[in-house]
Amino acid sequence: MNLRKKLIYQSWHRGTRENDLLLGLFAEEIIPTLSDGDLEAYNQMLKHEDADLFAWITNQKPIPENEIMVRRVRDFHQCR
Image 1 (cartoon, helix red, strand yellow):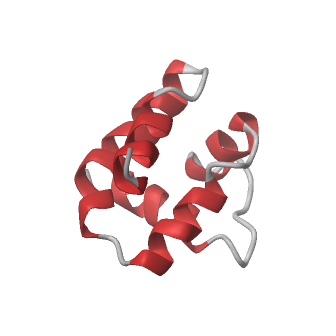
Image 2 (cartoon, one colour; image 1 turned 135 degrees about the horizontal axis):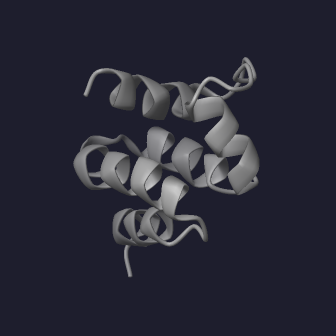
Image 3 (cartoon, helix red, strand yellow; image 1 turned 90 degrees about the vertical axis):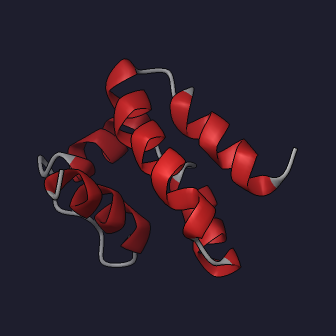
């Protein structure tokens, strides 16, 4: 399985339905357009706990400075 397909799959199968939707919708639309560096950043982002990702994406907690991909996911959903 190539990395893009793997990341899309992992985004849809996080363990919580809320994160499945937040990350899965982003992944389906954006993963095909990401550079290799951005794919690696997204892969690293997926290693965070679901509770942290959800809190960051929904603005319940501030996003750490170095989490560029979390910001992209949040911005993707704010523009929808």
